[in-house]
Length: 144
Image (tube, rainbow, N blue to C red; front, top):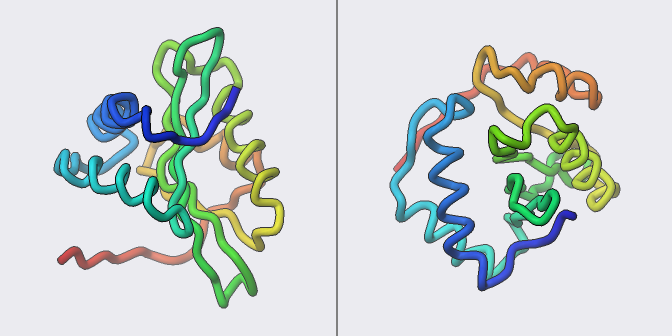
């Protein structure tokens, strides 16, 4: 079952966020305050970011955090799969693909789905199987 984030999910969101940001899927951890402010932001205004949880056999198997934006290059809405995390005990059960199918169905109006991954991420085969292609851009960031 896939369900959206609710106010009562704060502890679960913080727990899964800590797991994700200590995994090899990311380049570095982020401050705990960033997790909390993201949670509060999504509760107050979900126009730009949303979170979903996946439950499997009565247990939380993972989460997906998306961002919604307009892409002139794509000619419409773009959905960023910012974070897609399946807990280790639930991997290789098809849940990552199920999560992606759900997001692509819920946001079928989007002109583009986009994600980032660290080099060597074992989920790369899943992304390719779902139709994602490497993007020929190098990305840069400037945090303030």
